[in-house]
Image (cartoon, rainbow, N blue to C red; front, side):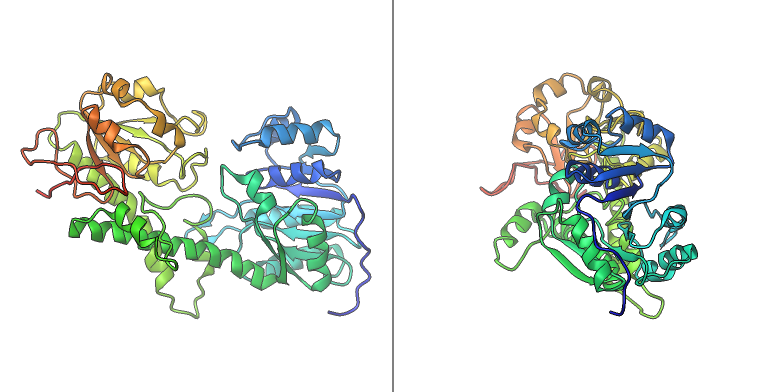
Length: 455
């Protein structure tokens, strides 16, 4: 794609990672372990100090050990300012501003690179952005250095594809897509990621790579919305949605996701909006967003029915993270349910074994359960499956369990005297006082639960 004066990649290049969060920290640590000279940059002094002492500000399996090894090796340093490097990797967040991406941090990180950009450098953007951002936003800022993209320096886009709680494995094993300003840019970025990525690396152009990232997350959002609509339809038909989905997924070309209280996280709940374009009247993506955004309200109404008529009811919420086995609360549907319950003057206590109290105010398990009228599981942490219903029963005032994630053994909870209601059930109002008969309904393929009757 034209003449280039750029130098070849060094065996152990100098790398600057801008943004030390869920993606920046593991990326920096993995590169440092491969003997690259890595400088991690963040504008938050508390983050820099934590990492400097080997402490990880995010909870990720194996990350602390890997980070400490990287620091001890001398190949990973941290600072508040960049320096001259062969590679600059931007990993800053792009939070939603209305329905548009907030690119202020991407712009600030890019500007911070300009004084240190040299001929032969490669700049890689990992942040999730609307198509055209690399060309229309990042490139013009970088060229304020007096250097020309494609002729003097390389520019690439390589979106992350990881699941919080399992980032270390996925950052290495998942396939990656790299878009380049030109072929040489994509190839130089590939040289860096190939050091630790064992999955396949696919090369394309900048706009396509940006589009692909958003398409992936919109696809997942649409599929979650489909599962959530199935839950509502199954309730109306008196069908166990969890069994139905399990059976449907035995079809070789069907893979339905699980319904739940909503979609959270910094990706799926946000990114689909970035894909839309004013020139196209898209229908499916906005509809899916509406379905998933409405789920916390649906779950709130179900919980309110379970405590209807009780004087000063208390709900014990299990899980505030947006997904199981992670400590990430960004866009968490659980928080939306908690806020809505409190708006109805319900006393809500929250237990989450992974989310630090400094991130979201939670209570110890015993305090959360004490005199509770309903337990609501809103996050599918693995720990919840190991709770002893017999011990839980000794603390609560009423033995009512609402499982919005279908993540515990309902037969064990029923054996301990709990009325169990599951997302997809037609919720009985105040079930312990209801005269409606509730009988177990199960097939061999699913966990026991109650057939709920409408009022």
